[in-house]
Image (cartoon, rainbow, N blue to C red; front, side, top):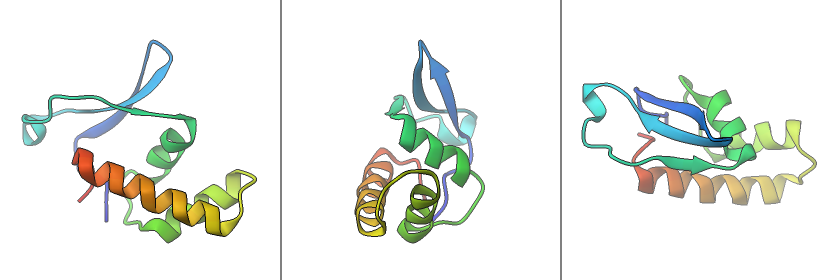
Length: 88
């Protein structure tokens, strides 16, 4: 999967949010709030193909988390991003 074109990470009032830009995302009328870890993943995945395993690799490289937990958390985040329509 991949983050859809036109979605960008911004910091608004100290909060990381994903918003849509461009006519391709004209029907996207919400902001998706991300915590620090999800924002780290978003930044490192833009423009790349990824799956939960790739996300878990990023998490275990940068945070003190075991692989099993990182993988489970990555799968949950993917579900949230799919529900929000920011990945394809």
